[in-house]
Image (cartoon, rainbow, N blue to C red; front, side, top):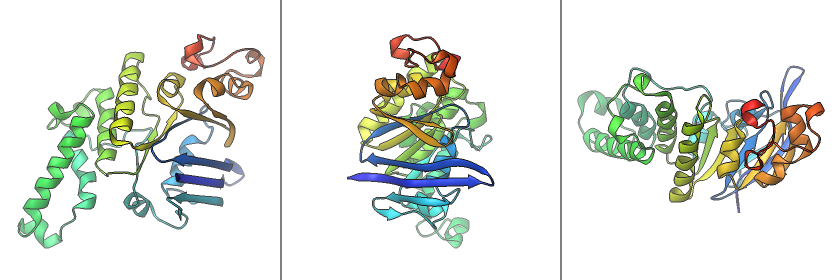
Length: 273
């Protein structure tokens, strides 16, 4: 059974069609990668799923329920969590405090309880802190819990965003270019982290990436977008060698007989694309 279904989804900004008649089905427990050159419409797609934007056409369903007409916080409560291409951390707050802001979603307390520290406040705060520390432990940041987020190394800040998303206890995790700005060693470590989270939690995960080496290394299925449209779908090897994908990354003049799959050692791997 599919957890997430997009059918004929379209989004326009004036005369620009950012996403055009896009369809995709993601099964429970699946790890799917969405690739494409800059401006392909990948982040717009995530913004549609999370109700940042409303689609102009088509439908988006989570567990059979349409998400059209919902607000972002309602989609989050249904079990969708995401990270962002541009970090959105509270830089002066500690790593733990950043995660606690998300963990509080499922442990609300009243205004009176929050200012008096009476009633359920202490028990809920204890639960929030425990769950937040568990999320930090899962991404390897438990020892940095009390360090200001803005002072963490860049790669650790990326991990912190994932921890915050996990604290929302999602059914569906959307990772928007988690390897952006990372060096090859950090990307390899991130590969291992995403795979471990996916396997340990059996968490349905969709990863947007420009870096082909991350997607090829971890994803069971890959979708390629260009100019808002799906141009290829299949295994990483199939998509990497698809002529339309190669053309999208390298340009028509360089596309003949090439692959953009890092595992095949082709010219024009994503770092050069």
